[in-house]
Length: 496
Image (cartoon, rainbow, N blue to C red):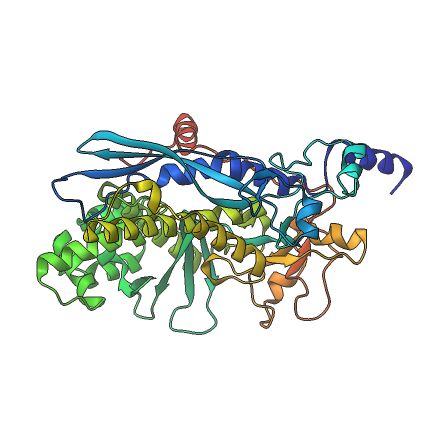
C-alpha cells in the first residue's frame, strides 16, 4: 500500500470500527428482532381452563431491556460494568421486561409487567454501559480504550460468537449427482423463522420426478402439485412448458393420470408416508403437514397451496433446462448464494426457540395449577430463570439451536492482532473431515469481502476464513410488500 492508501484506511477507521457489522447486528436484534419475535407468538390459548371460564387468552405486548444490572445477595440492584463481571466471574447481562395482558371472555382482567429473564449484552453495543465513553472514561472503568468490544462476558469468560457462512435460504441449488439413481438433484432450504427444512427434487431413470422433505420420502412430484390444488394436466403443462415443451412432463402426467382431484392426490401421498387412519383423518393430517412443512417460506395457510404448486412447477422447468438444455448449473460457492449469520442473527434464532420453550412452560404451569384448583395469577407462573439459563448456557458452551456446535468461543488473547482476527472470523458449517475442495478454494467473489490469506493449515483450511479489513455487512431487510410492489411496477405478474 502506498502512503495515500494508509491515509484512507486510517481515515476510514476514525469513523468505523473493525467489527462494526457485529455490533450493528446485535443492536438490530434488540431494537427490532425482540419485538418481532413477540409479535410472531400471537395469542396464547390454554386447552384446560378454570371452572366457569369459556375463553382465556394470554397476550404478550411490548418487550424491552434495560442496561446491565446485578442483584446482590441482599436484593439490591445496581449497574454492573464489564470489569466487575470479569473479576467476580459474573455474566454481563441485562433484564428483559415484557408487558403481559390476560383476557377472560374477551375482557381484559389482568395487565402487568414481568421480567422474563436476562440476556447477555455485547460490549460496546448501544445497550452496554461503555457505549460512547471517551478514552479517559474507559480507563477509569478499567477498560482498554483500543479494545473494540463485540464479545460477551459469561461467568467471567470473554466469549465471542463467530459469524457463520451458510447457503442462502429459500433459493434452489442444482447439482450434478455422481452417485445415486438421479443424474441431477435440486435442493432448497426453505426457512421460516429459525428453522430450515431441506427439500430435494430428483428425476429417476424412468423420467419421474420425486420430492423429498421431512418424513415425505420420494413422493411423485405431480401428485404433490395436484394435492396443492392444481389438478388439471393442462394447467400443470402450461405452468412448466410456457416456453418449450418437454417429453418428460408428459411421462410424469401419464404416471399420475389416475389422480383426478385433490382428495385423490392427498390420499396417494398419505399412503406413501404410511398413514392408516380413516380417509377424512388422513386427508386432514396430510394437508396440515403440506401446509406447515412444504416450502414454509411461501406460506403456511391453505390459501398459499396454489402458490406452492406454481413454485414447484417452476422448479421442474428449471430442472429440465439444466438436465436437458444444458443450462449453466448453480455455483454454490458464489457469494451471491451465501448468507452470513452475524452474532445478532444467531442470538435472534436462539431467542426465538427459547421464547417458544418459555411459552410452553407457561402453558404447562397454568394447566397444572388449574387442575389442582390453585390458579391465582399468570404473573406467578412466568419463570424468569428458564430463559436466562438457556441463553446463557448456549453462549457459554457454543451449543446452538439445530445441533450446531462451536458457535461461541473463548476470545483469543495471545496479542491484540489475534483478538482482532478472532472477532472477524467466518466459519463454514461444512465438516472439516470431508474433502469439499470447491468450498475450500478461493472464489473470485471473495475479493474485497474475505481475506485471501488468513486461513489455518490442516483440515479447517478454506472453511475458516476472516472478513476483509474494510468489509461491511448489510443489515437491512427488504419488506416483502415493498418488493412485490416494485416487481409489479417492473411488469412482473403475480400469481393470483
